[in-house]
Image (cartoon, rainbow, N blue to C red; front, side, top):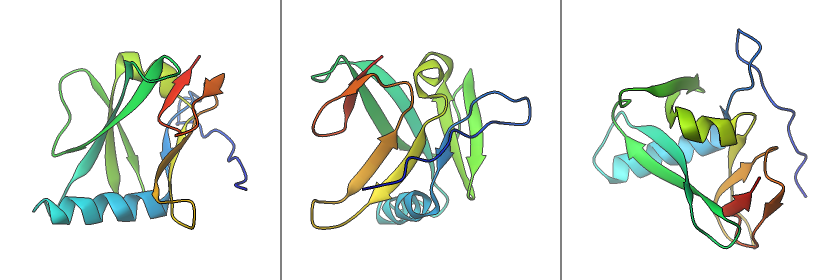
Length: 122
């Protein structure tokens, strides 16, 4: 069982999104497999999934216009403003073990989540 980390705040006191060092390591490894030596991550929320909203992860080179840029553990995270509302306070981690491997969102805004961990409701 994981200890749920406390939500981090940026310099202005607003909730931010954090990424664990292990998650950053895996994102960088996935980027190298794709032939990208300096890759970053785009995170979004879209409608769908069994709980109503689903997480979207995408390797990215640079931010799009109107995306918030969060720098964490040497990685830039790009989040559009609409998704940020649902993700503020979230910690993105990477877990491996007997039950599988993958990215895990510890999202304090999620009221319910599905069994696979990729969708949620607020």
